[in-house]
Length: 307
Image: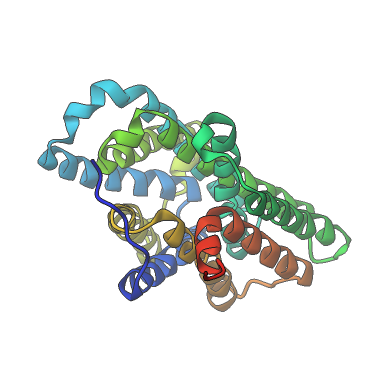
């Protein structure tokens, strides 16, 4: 029987602040190093290094015994993980890191929709449907509003669309994990499936597209890949799973939406990316919608009238 989760406290908030900062700068690092190493090669490299580390940790903890009953779901989750980073890698070559940070984090909306149709215990409530409406209204505002602006070109629209597709792939990965035997497997095994399958798939795609030749081992390129592998894919993900075993997921989900805010801020400050008014309005609607979808239970408890 799993231990009861507690509400988020000051410690959880501080840890989530650090995690969101790490996740928010991730897209900026990829775009920063893109001239030296193709984004898809960065994704393959980070996945391979992190898979090795997680595999060592998994063997040390004896997690291999669960592979015989989870490999089907693991392969599917890994394929979706690879698809997510393929969309991110291709999208970042067309749009800004700030845009990618916001559109990628539409993932909880797609997760909620998928679980709504698959699991009776995950049916959406009225407040969550309102959140989905707000999120899609925000996406529409960011897309359609930009069509009339001179600064919004066709490539950026395609890149933004790839960001939404990456969010869909991420959401689908969560649905697979939640609705398969992976939900009862050690988190290290679930992470290993995603990283290893992602590494193999992304490397094959990079080879077929000739992007393997777009690798120059500059300090920027090496720093980007190592940051993504060691800090993001290994350290931060394990800390996130550790938090999920101790705190209510709905509480943590609300805090996690600081990530796009950090992503937009770093994109503007470090890469001098411009922000259009319609995108800012759309991003606010998306974040409000996602907060309603993922934090619905927390919001109801927080604002429940006292007897």
